[in-house]
Image 1 (cartoon, rainbow, N blue to C red):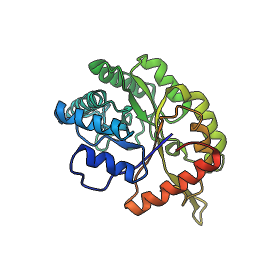
Image 2 (cartoon, one colour; image 1 turned 45 degrees about the vertical axis):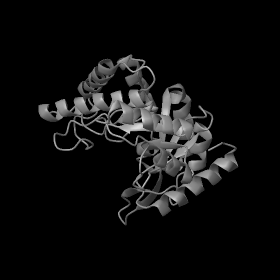
Image 3 (cartoon, helix red, strand yellow; image 1 turned 30 degrees about the vertical axis):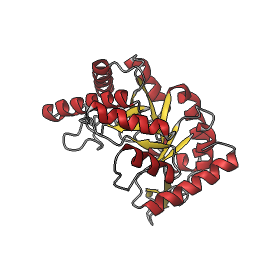
Image 4 (tube, rainbow, N blue to C red; image 1 turned 135 degrees about the vertical axis):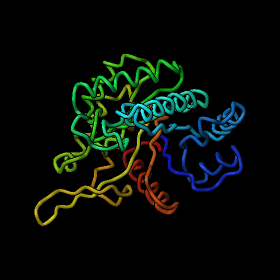
Length: 280
């Protein structure tokens, strides 16, 4: 696998960016340029990444391609298409988005209609439109798993893959986003093993973080995201499961606030990987 995380430094060009990624101890990174970058700039960053043995893990396309607001929908489809085209141009492993939401105000919010058959079909159609517009040959459009909409499990992800029926659609795995109960929290090792067993051939990139679980005085469960190593998830099981897949699989930390937090989380994951015999 290839550990990745945020680059905080304001880099002075492609070589400086690639050197900073390696200085941080990472071998994967998010795409350093946006969809409007010209071909020469994209080529320069792709060349620098190859020279430094850095894999560009993903191009983010965070938006709502199933929005009930027509203007938001059109903008989202345009953003996703341009992001996927950038991933293809720069040689990123994937372009990643979430499926969206039937909520007209937020792209990642819960909604009563999010788990209907109609919404499933809308997601399928949006993915087809994006993939067919670009026709990628060396990258993939992917969805990050979420608890508020499809795909919220390995099984529903497989259902989407079958329904979409496009080679350019694959899996971005964030299993922590699918942990929404004490049962799954404490049974994470078995859960991640089964998830990787089902989705393994389709997984192109991963996010990694941790969770803490608390119960209020009224026994209401509360889950909080936290840095790897500061929560209670069995992340060794996560490393062990995905470590059986491709050696170039990006394993990207996210949502931390400082370089120091990323350094501590990275060291924790390296220790786990070493104990599991997984190169990171």
